[in-house]
Amino acid sequence: MLGSAAIHIALYLGAVVVLLPFVWMVAGSFKPEPEFFQHPDTLLPVAPTAAAYADVWRRIPFGRFFLNSVVFAGGVACLSLVLDSLAAYALARLRFRGQNLAFWVVLLVLMVPFQITLVPLYLTVSQLGWLNSFAGLILPRATNAFGIFMLRQFFLGIPRDLDEAARIDGASEFTIYRKVILPLSKPALSTLFIFHFMYNWNDFLWPLVITTTPDMRTLPAGLTLFMGQHVIEHALLLAGATITILPLLIGFLLAQRQFVRGVAITGLK
Image (cartoon, rainbow, N blue to C red; front, side, top):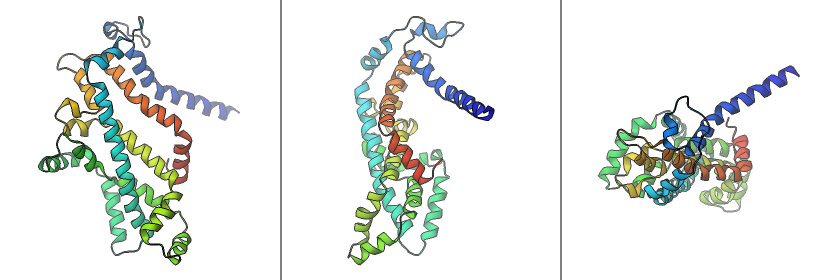
């Protein structure tokens, strides 16, 4: 009984620690700018106002940033599902020379921080003439080592008897991939789509480096317009950040059951 109470207390404390920054962000978005500099500071606004939310839409092309984020994150997520699943199928279900080496290369790439590849990627995109374009934003993110590894592990758990039965019926490898493996992998694919979409929706560095004009910026990169060299408009930044996470929050709540099921089936922690 005592142990159970201690576990619940620890969980509640952990939840408070995790949620406190979000509460501070939402509460701060309703503060007038002078309240950010008062002493002592308060968590909740003394004189709440929603002026920052109106100013976000008026001061910057927020709708354009939102559309760019949808195209960028959605395009990367959809394209990654196709390419990651194809590579994972080859590594999990086919037999070819160098298969194990290819898998270890994927694991090696998984350990390389993105910042190391940022400059070579930028130079490549620049030489191709893709700067400040959706092609430059999306195509370098078109596949992901984590996605390949995750789907490979899931595909290994699907009985090979299904492949053999399909081959006896005359199915090609692509038909087996499309009509046997993918339908059985919906939980894993849904989970990976959410991972890819959330990561790229929140990505700040890559869109900021690749885009050169405000009309191509995504939401995280576009909000930097409220950060001047000497002045930071805190309320506007927090209001913009709050609006930015709302689609992710709504999407997660709607797909929560599928997401948890996919994580449980693929064995991720």
